[in-house]
Structures are given as structure tokens and as C-alpha cells.
Image 1: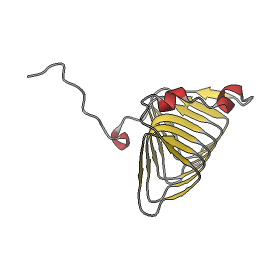
Image 2: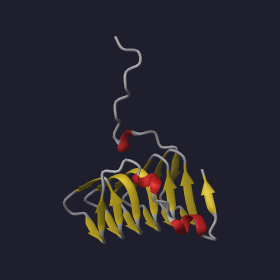
Image 3: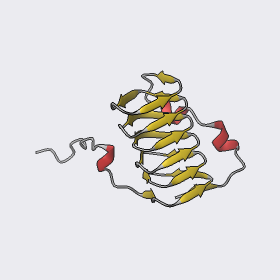
Length: 141
């Protein structure tokens, strides 16, 4: 019996969501969240989530995104810096993607450039300069 065994990896869709931007919500400004977030509303601004991010079918982001894991069912217009990315059949992405792993379902739409690397610190090392230098408000959740 192992009391100190490694935790099993849990799929992003099964994680406890600490931040939710629900359908009908509109956020103009940057968003920074410490854990897992789900966006079903609209965000105009940069998004930085420390652990993982799910964009629901009705969710949209007009801005850049930095996170470790990401699943896209909705729409993103902007650059993505992630370690692991899944674009589902209903997902639409326009912009540059920097990632280690990529899974794209049939029906997904992607327009832009793709850069893949084996570096484990990809999402953490590439900070979006606009997010830091932007005059927009940053909302920390």
C-alpha cells in the first residue's frame, strides 16, 4: 500500500473550476486566474491562467492567452502560449499557437502559424508583453 503515490493525471474537463465567466457575461480587460478557469462568455483582453483553461462553445476571447493546458470548444482570436492544446470540433482559432502538444478534432478551424517545442516551461517562459505593458485593467480572481 502506497500512502504517498503520485496523483493520477485528471483530464482538464474533469478539473474543479475555480473561475467561471458564464454565458452572457462580457469582460473588457485582462483576466488573471490562479488555477483552472472556464469561459462561456466573452472576453476582450489578454487571459493568463496558471493551470488550465476551457473555452465553452459559446465562449470567445479576443486577445492573447497563456496557460498550461487548454481545451477550446469556442472561438479565440489571438496568440496562444500553452503546454497542451486541444481544439474540439466546434473550436475556432485565429492566431499564432506555441505549444508542446496539439490535438485537433475533425471540424475544428485554425488559421495562423504553429510552433511546437519540447520545452516544459513554454507557457511560463513566453510572457505576452502586451499583458504587462497594457493600460487595460487586470482583474485577478
